[in-house]
Image (cartoon, rainbow, N blue to C red):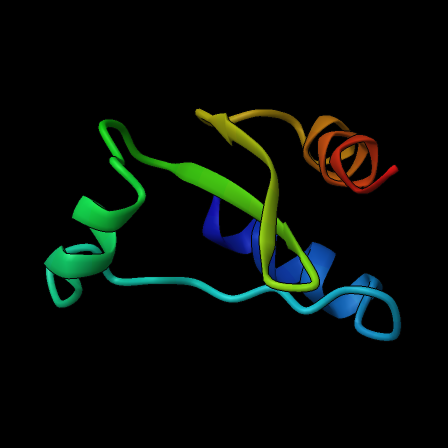
Length: 71
C-alpha cells in the first residue's frame, strides 16, 4: 500500500496531508489508538478522528474512503 498512499498524497497534496507512522518506533501511538492490524488508516479533521479503516485496497477505494470520512 505504500506506493498507493504516496501516489494519493502526491495527487491530493493541495487538499490532504497524509503521513505514515512506523508502528515499531511508536508503540505509544499504537496503544493510544488501539491499533490491532496493519495497515490501519485513521482520518483526522481538525485534530479529531473522523474515520478509520483497515487493510489493503485499490487506490480508488482508498481515496473514496478518505473523502467519505471527511464529509
